[in-house]
View 1 (spheres, rainbow, N blue to C red):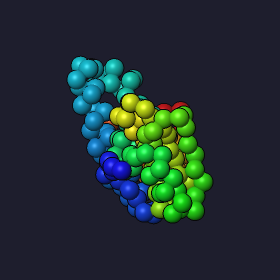
View 2: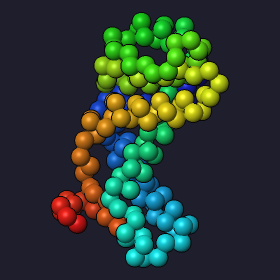
View 3: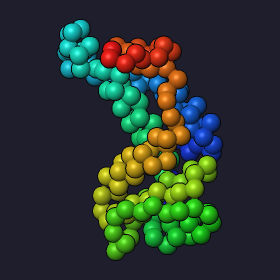
View 4: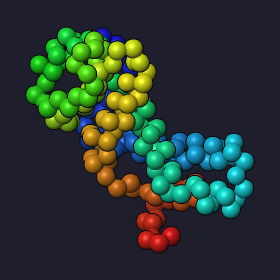
Length: 158
């Protein structure tokens, strides 16, 4: 069994802290992508919305989640040690399994793979974010505006 990734939050508070720590980095990445695309100021303001930066923030966090990669037997052994619901996608007829199970959650999210390990890891991280983190991270403390982070609440219709 192998482990990949950087973030394995033990608590919701730790997940929120790690997520918050990435907010500025996400804004920087989106801003630099806009520059690489040679967007002028008006195009940038039109295309780089709060939702675009928030999506980048979510994707960055998800891409850093720690996952375990192993065989069905290793996965089943892990599951017997946890009192959690297993949410698994993929086929039971392939040998590889990738999973994520933060200590604070009552679920283990897993997907199977035959040959495409990297694709399975990426898919699993997105699924884990959606199923385990999106709700607990809740509303962001600051909102993204024009590539900058502010603590001012976004106003509807802006």
